[in-house]
Length: 285
Image (tube, rainbow, N blue to C red; front, side):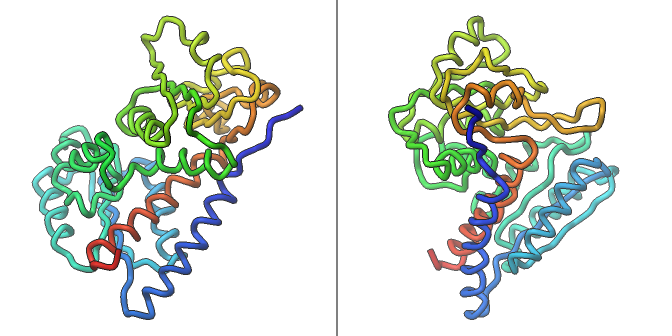
């Protein structure tokens, strides 16, 4: 029997509907959540992401600013813009699109964003709060992963979750969020010696390694939930995840497709973070 598909597009729309309703209520009080996105350079993928964020703000009734800077922008100029946005009262969320040009220190820029406006969830204060289980703005993709699992009707508590990939953006934070939901978590990565043995024990398998179709059916325990965070462009121009969807769906439980799985959730969780940040900064939460 083929696995049920976790429809990230549909779940994302459900969440956006709730956000839209809340923003409409806030608008009656004369208040709008505001998001500033900063793009440095001409990276094509980044330009697409920024356009999608701008579109989401427009559709949900947020105030939006997009600052498009040339690739020659100095680190000092970028930090000066971040400082200005930190002090701007109608901006509640700041996102500097990564990657940045090589001459700019990404860490210095992330550290400069006010932790209260860090809607990407990358600031050390937010990462630290995530680590110790305190309230914080959560990284968007990992938060989206947890939301997809829950809305697929899966109770995470007590399950064995295996995460392939240990990046600061997905692997590490998603492992912490799974633990917060009372899963037992195993981390696998490029140096893991017995990866297949470990993944075959997973009730929930989250794959985020950036290698197209890496995980096939032989990695997957029958009935396991499979969340594919990968987004790889093949030579023929098509998108593929890190999971070989066609083979894995024959053995897995609920599974996310690529595209249409985790992808739509990332921007939706960014919008949710911006609303949370706005309400906190306005003393409404």
